[in-house]
Length: 253
Ligand code: NDP
Ligand code: 8X3
Image 1: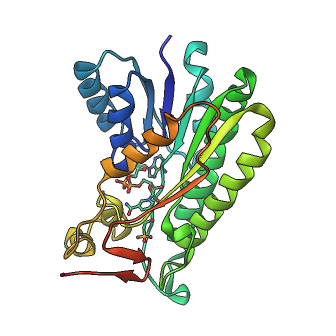
Image 2: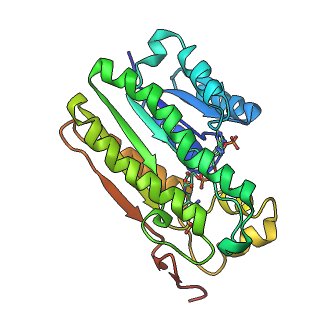
């Protein structure tokens, strides 16, 4: 039986790029995200290209009951998940803390922290039964540093960094590998989502330098997962060459 990877947020960006590279390497996939039609289109595309099986589960990671229902209702064979990629996440807004929109804060906290926890609780228990598995958590350079107006997004990614360490400790007895991936600027739909559909503003974020692509990050994730079983890559920060940290990005050279 082929290995299985469950990818949250597979409808765009890094999650979608992971779906491609894992399918290329023969993994059967459980693809999740809210946009059902995108999941379906991706599954069709991968089915045509690769000899793999794909399960689609459209749900919002913020909805605890929907997470549990969708995952627990998968057929038993699909619960033998080898790799969980906790990728679904987003940023909303870029304002000083006193001007922040409380509903944006709640969206980020509910998605990036609570959603990741709901999925992890279900899938880690499946892995524990089999005494194997690998969990990859998408943190961010924003989880290692804090930048102006990034306040709550940075806080959620610091929480992911902490949970990544916690999972490594708590799941150690069960031989589950846990890896934190912390990208800098990756050109995806991320800034479009942050700026709520303002594509002009989003485009400007990536002007004047070569940003990372979703595939750059998916390649690194695949590298961590494809190491021999006794090797765990605990934590990686990946930036564009033009980026030293969250405050120092060389544009227009
Ligand atoms: P995209 O916006 O391109 O993709 C985000 C994915 O997350 C989409 O598939 C989206 O699916 C899914 N998602 C968002 N909210 C929910 C939700 N409530 N329920 C289920 N799925 C959800 O962004 P990226 O690919 O760039 O981001 C992926 C991860 O990488 C995020 O955790 C992000 O914080 C992190 N990251 C991104 C960086 C960047 O510069 N781009 C840098 C560092 C980290 P749908 O809308 O269909 O639900
Ligand atoms: C996304 C990278 O620097 O825009 O996590 O927050 S940043």
